[in-house]
Image 1 (tube, one colour):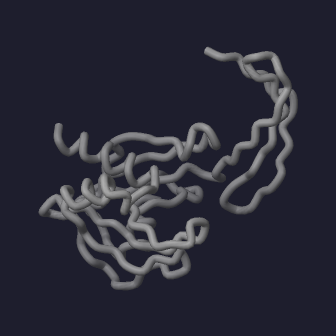
Image 2 (cartoon, rainbow, N blue to C red; image 1 turned 60 degrees about the horizontal axis):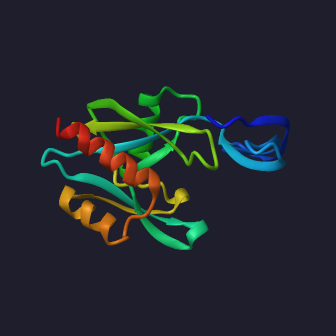
Amino acid sequence: MADWKTLNTETIYQNKWLRLDEDTVINPLGQQSIYSHFELNSEFVSVVAINDDDSIYLTQQYRYPIQSLSWEIVSGQTDGQTVIQAAARELMEETGLHATSFEEVGGIYVDAGLSGSKGKVIIARGLSQATDELDQLDGITQAKPFPIAEIRRMIKDGEIQTPHTIAAFYIALEHMEK
């Protein structure tokens, strides 16, 4: 294992969602350098909502950093709730769905090169439509189920490129195939 030594950490920016730190480090080659990283203020959940015919709900939302619409798995921070409470809240906010069961099936990092923040992958089943209202504040334009084969194609063809969606999908798929 490579040895890194942190000499100093300075918080560059912080808001209610994340903190950006800049560390002065000695890297494995013995050189002093800067390593910038962000940390989410709470754990996150990625919710793979599976209906009775094994289709998976995706949300389409406008993502400001890429200036484009993106199809994604339901996801968000826990904001002080348990992972399951947050999964239920995010599912309702982003799809209008209620689920009767939630199961934690894995974990993922946001991006291990940029952050130590972790999240949980949750499978939600027993879905029913509770409301037609979607979280427009987050730019969500629609939510709908897709067959597994269609999601695989969307990933292969580059229509889905968000790491949390791809990772959560394949973690859930592996769990479903057991």
